Length: 257
Image (tube, rainbow, N blue to C red; front, side, top):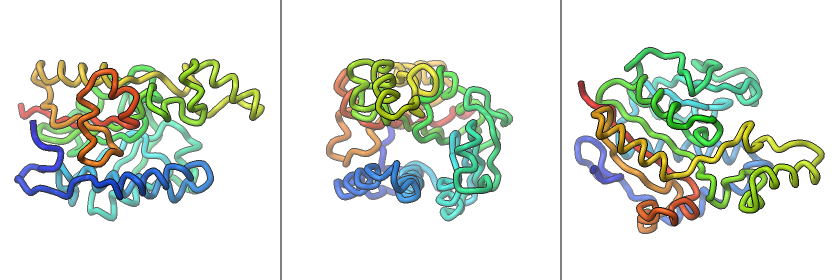
């Protein structure tokens, strides 16, 4: 397996630091009150993260669930040719007009041809689809041989697994959503079984290993996204990784054939 800090060509990139983790956590705390700051920071971090494994200049990057354009801006600034897919019309136009080269569509049935992009990327979307392995398979399908697939999501048992209903999701997802409705007079945006689904780390890792065994991909890395380099071992421990990973990442390279 390649090191998570060694892109093709062998140049070692800077390792994730504690300072980065703290900065992301501070931005995360204002997700609801200052979404521009949060999603802008997350988009910039996504570009830096993908740059560990591939060059982005002049590469076609498909962003599944790209939202209102923060990621489009960050990838364009990095020199990538950006294409976005977003199923939610409200998210698509949250900053006004939809970002350039973004279409409305589902990650479960991507409106792209086989092998049509260099990089398929998704950040915090997998937990919002009822069949995460199907979405991951779609991302592999549209990636060209030798291309990169990077999937980042929030595991259900992590501290933010229930999203705005956290940490009450530990007492039951439906109970947490009902509690939110009693307190706020409306159902949460992330409502278990409707717009939010349990997506543990273990099944996705097993899916990736099975795809590797079938000759479809090579597993490049599995890591906890927001952790500094010296804490990334937690993702290798079944059970523990479900709780402390916070956000899991699976990195795949489409098989050459």
